Image (cartoon, rainbow over all chains, first blue to last red; front, side, top):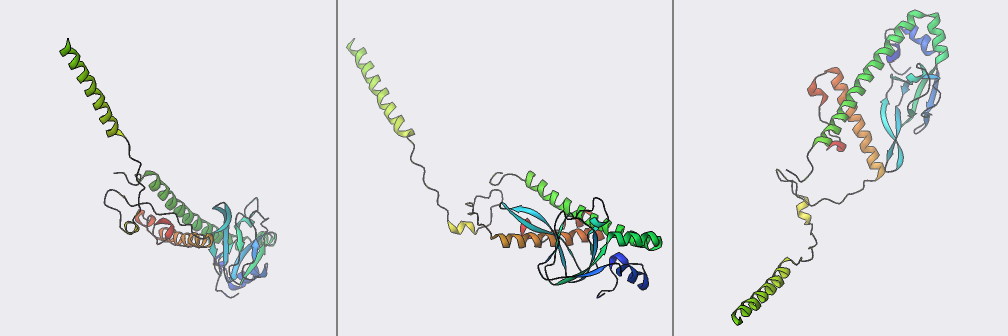
Length: 162
Length: 102
């Protein structure tokens, strides 16, 4: 792969990491291509190998539905956690804003490998928990920052008054 | 008797004249059309009261608005990641240059 060590495989030896990545297939995405839509069955976990992946959600902007960026994933970063979490449906839409390549690891193959190698499963699961925990903390902070603005808008005096 | 009638007539005339003057005084002039001086729009708001004429709402092209939202998300995510690395109350409220919050 073009990057050092994906966050998902941190702590594994090169040989162990190679075995995990061998479970997946490489998917090339031209600029603007959609990898999966919102609500699609989540059967694969993905790792960005090259380029960038934009994760978006629809937002109503002036009576029009616009895909608004929620997160961006860069080489080495994993996405598509819904493949690991029931009900296994993607809660975001993934597109490639530029020519990109991702590694798609099927959930069934990954879980079969984990069943055979619980020591690897333990390390990968730790990585998953760490990354998901950090993203939760970031989103908690983003949510509070937006709430702070809502409170300020609600409590500020009307314009033009003393 | 004549004197009484004279006083009564003069009083009535006085009341009538007062009524006419009062009516003329309270007659409302048509409201003047407010003029928005363009130069006032460029002035900063005063300390207590923002008495500038309201600016006309300029509708941004939807593409520009979408780019502003994306920029806002990236800046907010960076600020939230900085808070995650150094969690303090001050870091949580760090200002960004996002045009959506200014």
